Image (tube, rainbow, N blue to C red):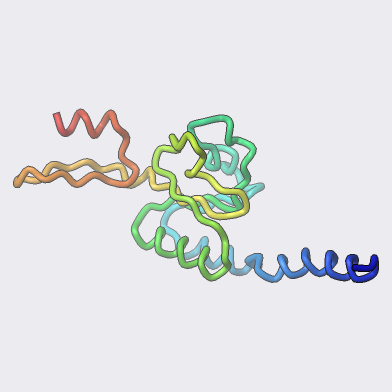
Length: 141
């Protein structure tokens, strides 16, 4: 491959990637659909919202963190990520040692608001996706 061909191809790669990035209007539309907060880089609260439990992943920079407050928020975030081909990560407590609860350039769906733990009369338990071990153990004891 000659130099001119290499430069032409390598110059097109970043431009192709920009076509898939969600425009500001799409982010604003997502924000309006959510009952919970949407944190983007530069927003107040973003540094805290993006952090999980393990500091070794603090360098990761999600494009957004959705603080899901209802099932429809999760659906909206997943649909948005799918339409824009963004990676997505679900975060409950952020305790994923391998770092699965965060993602660079994608959307983190924070499920911590789904923290309910209920024992039904028939003995079955309903445990929210954001429930922590302490409250689960206390409720089930």
